[in-house]
Image (cartoon, rainbow, N blue to C red; front, top):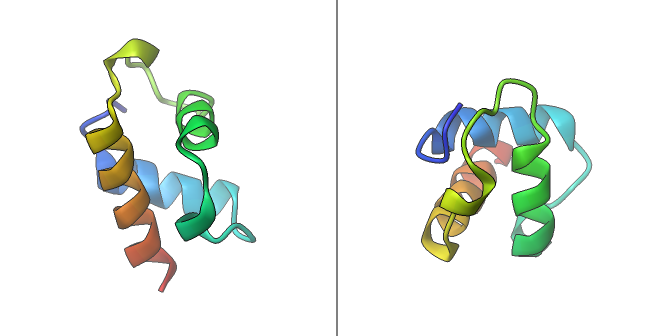
Length: 64
């Protein structure tokens, strides 16, 4: 997975953190959790606030 795979990342985050409300996740935690996902193989420094926000929004959509 790469940073641009927002939906795939969101689904993985939902599976790995089922009890977390994504609306309240800090971007620092979100960044760490994404980079720790199995199958994630992009450079940690390639993320941005815009990418993290897109991941967070996709995660919120999947959680509904």
